[in-house]
Length: 103
Image (cartoon, rainbow, N blue to C red; front, side):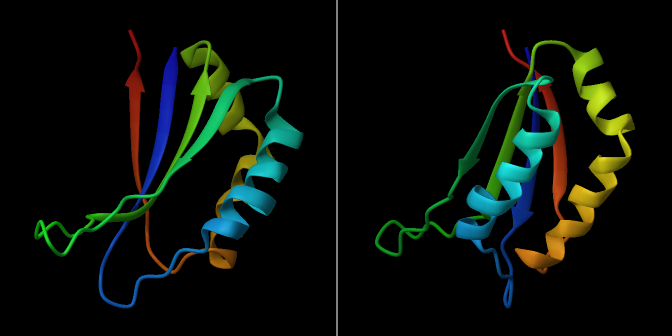
């Protein structure tokens, strides 16, 4: 299984609308790419002042694929570009992408 993760860095002035991302954005992704996806998830990093822990990210989105080829098919689809353009509706930061193979 392949995991495609999009990390949204935390910084002063950074915004992330998790409600939009999990609702509207994920709905569009699942509607168009559902046959290629095993699952999509969202992680909300937490900060804890008592522990002195500041979240490095304000959001992490994950897409799971059966094969790397399924990920390549998604990325080759012109609609993937439209989904990238949708980012202005939920964040003002440049994300970091990590692709991993799950065992």
